[in-house]
Image (spheres, protein in one colour):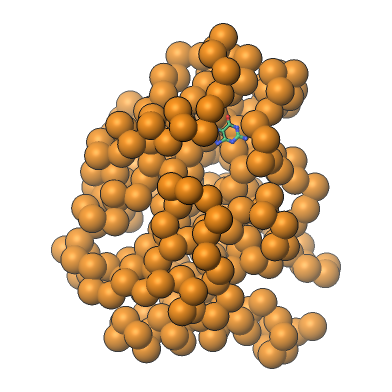
Length: 270
Ligand code: 8IG
């Protein structure tokens, strides 16, 4: 398989990018954002939405299976003149559609011209002073999926995967932003307390099910990555409370306005 092979994931991303360019009338996007649980409102703060495309109209995208996740791609004209592509349709690794499907949106963003990929998610927190609703910067990750979006002998350097330059920009907007190492589990179950302790021992601070594989694909595509997690719950066993998906969605909803405004301010400076 080569990158121009018509069956390659890169070719599918090119086809998706052509549709986005044609339907939106925007030939190139500068920056792309994947908005996870709790971050969706950021799209409204970024600028003027000039096109909104159902994900299922774009090659390679499928309908999101997760309640609380929307399924559209938006083209936004920012006040600084830049064009942002907002991806509201994430495929999770646990959906068993394969790693190609998981990173298709990231590859499409790259094919649309984006040089910066902003990856956001809702996640569990291991640092016990984080309260639900706290946004944190991802400083690095530990990929526990035992999988990779890279195929064949593709050796990609992941030093500074979560760009320290972009993290500095984020901190220039909010100096209080804490950071942490994101640990991707397969899911869809949440961790056991013992697994959370393992993640902590390994050097992790955030537990989630999405971002590490996407970040790897973004780096392969040559994009700079900014990663942000909304801590919607303390990871299992860190607090005595059990985890529920409804609580996760509620915590996201109540923090949404504040963190979305924060994200829009950061993106305006990238
Ligand atoms: I929101 O506690 C959310 N996503 N793995 N663990 C994992 N993913 C999550 C969690 C969590 N909370």
